[in-house]
Image (cartoon, rainbow, N blue to C red; front, side, top):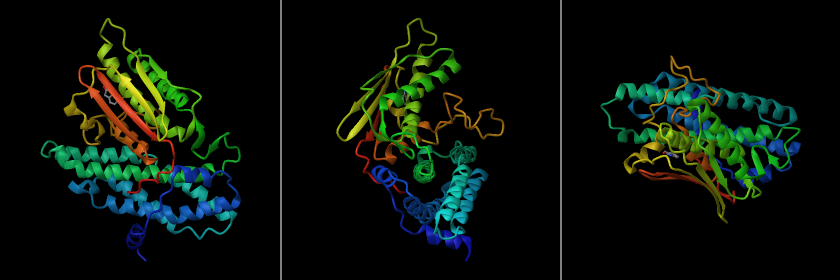
Length: 358
Ligand code: W6P
């Protein structure tokens, strides 16, 4: 049967979401039997999710589907779909190990999907600019939200399965999940990483003060929280730095408050960087207004893989919001023009919200 026919068949099958709690309970004792069930689940589930994305990539508005960068991403998805479909039924330990090696390889194949799609969007904007109102590109924005959300889920499931094979897991870790993650500690690390970049780029960096109980913990994925806080603190540092660098006043510190509620853990990042006008707020969550340089661009000297600049490639906030939503949280930005900005990062504490499955 033809590949495209097969993709459509699998793309119409029902996706199965899991919750943080389920991943945690499932992975708490990774016996050979558990690893077999995990591999069998992914062998069925991942081609469904990948097929849906491959189909959607073929029918994007304004000819985005035909941009070389987007065609390349589509081919990565088709190659991976083919890899899953040509893998034999998983019956024993050796099948599981072979399958695990394969999905590890597939995860690497898709490493640069985000900057590659950003390049496609950049190529599209060159054609359209300035004829089309960016509001009309909302369809593309919505597609990218679905596409990146799905990617977060696929990479979480692969990463989780691969990590369950680690013979020496860290204490209190189940795959990517830390069952006793201290948000204050993660916020401290992410803030220091963001400050280092600010220091390198500007020669100085405002202080970051963190308020909250360092001993408070809850189950979450430290890598996800690090990424989100890093992005928020970078934005705040940039705003404060740009406002105060030629001033005699000392830059006001960025303040992070970690609140542990019953339903949510909320992390507020506040800056006095002058704020954003209300009319400019919707823009900060869009993929299409970004004017940042792309690391994959022809004559870019930005190095992929290393965290290099304060600007990134402009997708940091919308993608951080997707990471928050992936486990049932959210990200809100509230600004006072002429003063500063507050970002509220809500994380669901219960961990029983199912993955959003676009
Ligand atoms: C700003 C703009 C912004 C976006 C996101 C988080 C913090 C801030 N601060 O000035």
